[in-house]
Length: 413
Image (cartoon, rainbow, N blue to C red):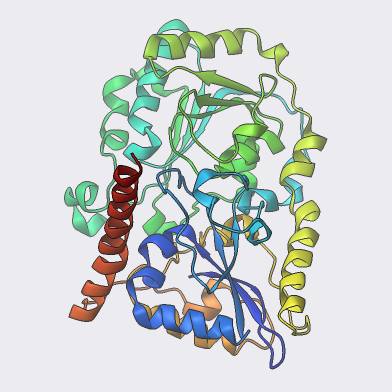
């Protein structure tokens, strides 16, 4: 589901954010009815709509800016894909700027393991490469201690088809017993609880923070990230990061030689660079106070409220109604505890949600209150009109724009 930031009242608009994924691939793109609603609600100042970009959008020539979009959240206002967005509509904050303050309450605890991996069982996260990297590290450092925090998303009823149908990297579940000896497995922990059985985040935030805090490094080998929350979590608890030199993300500016290691993708060189960091661990220094001022919600929640209040005032409406600014490190990214609520296919889910949040009077709009425990069924048979509309907006219009640019280029030269 999108994220509600402020309650709607009779005289004051509410505030809602969508993920970039919903805008690029979800119902705001696929459904004409949803877009018409968004435009009308924005025009009448019933709702103010924003976009939370949490993924790599470097492939876009420009952001698909629509009249209903009042602001876009991304750390780098000068990113090329935002070049068509007016500067006042770019809010350089994302979910990582709203990390809970208690994360950094304990720093300097004993480091009882070498590496903590927090990832997903997917090829985009390069989890297979991570396993082979740990395998080679053990050849040089047999007493290496590692913990993998990789939840298990498999739907058991799909059997072996789950890997293909759910886009899961099967290697994570079949390689460990082949790559590592019995003795080595004693030093490697795999925390891979079922998300189907125990929710999207089977481990509590407290436990994940403790595991990060007691590790020498956090390892992230992926190449493409938006604003990797695990990096902020790691730095907040005083643990340096190991990241790929090929990493593209909106958090690069916060990684320094004092708090991070950049490793090459070539296996032997990566192993050498990590071992050098483990052998010279005293050289790493993390200014936790500075990191707290960069990522902590106590710093940025007032800024967010002020920014949104100014938008409301500029629309000629008063600022009134309840604010919902709790757990934004999860909610802005649509990461629910039980489900990943993004409306990608079924417009009926969107309008059902809009009706429910429009009737909020008191209390928090949490998952249980809005939808209960049952998973949302986000599928719908497409009508001919929806298919045509999706093809037109997603392919024909961009193609026409591209051909126009090429024609003008040939005409000039």
